[in-house]
Amino acid sequence: MIDAADAGDQDGCLAYDVYVYRIQTSVAAMCAAMGGIDGLVFTGGAGNASPRLRADTCAGLGFLGVSIESTGNHALEGDGLVSAPGATPVVLVVEAREDLEIARHVRELPR
Image (cartoon, rainbow, N blue to C red):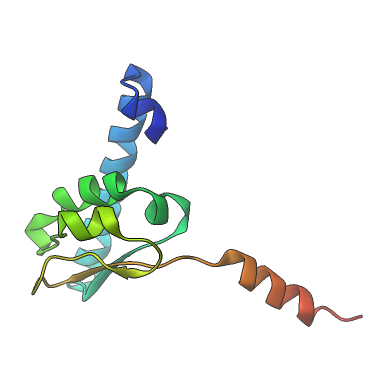
């Protein structure tokens, strides 16, 4: 979807815009329910791999104080802080490491 949007595909652009909008509305609803947030964490395939997704999502959450530093967001490899200096809440990228969790569960299976 992100690749299609980047290529200018009209359906891909629409799908991407809806995806970002749904992330933003979900984050905002959770913030309202919790009375705010200390941090916003991007993880999983899209959260890890797409600086564009992180930037576009955070751009619509400025009213919550969410702000990212563009250069750091685009240069990040692996886990790290991408929020703007002094910004609250902080914005982090955390690799999910599902493979390690699956391996742990397999080792726990009775033999």
